[in-house]
Amino acid sequence: MKAKKMVALLLIAVLVFALTSCSGGGGGAASKPSPVGTYTLSGMEEDGEATSQEDLDLLASLGLTVTLDIKEDGTGSINLFGEEMEFTWDEDNIIVDGEKQAYTFDGTTFTMENEGTKMSFTKDESK
View 1 (cartoon, rainbow, N blue to C red):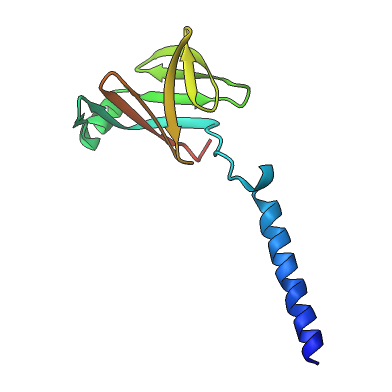
View 2 (view 1 turned 135 degrees about the horizontal axis):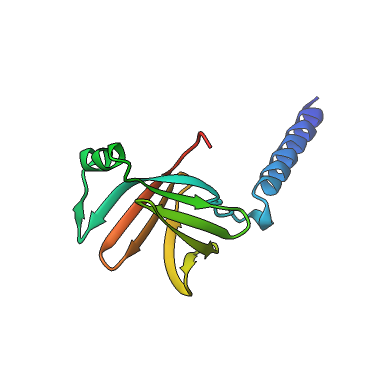
């Protein structure tokens, strides 16, 4: 009876190990989340000074929005208050007119920082 329990526990341990080994994909290393999606500006800082949510809401009420659309094919666009710019992207950078701009993405928030300006975008889950 003890031998059967021991074999059963050993089989369970092997199954758990096999399942956890396979679930990570790519050899057990966690893959970076894909930033593909549509985003809306949710925060902005200029030289360390944050723009308030009230100011962002006021801009939006005036039709002055900033949106980001990142496509699966490695292209995308940013719409800054009605002016649209096309870009390409890879897993570390957005490239506009040959200029690379590093970004971070945590699964829901996409953030870019350049020359003292930081812009954060929140993924629009309705699209």
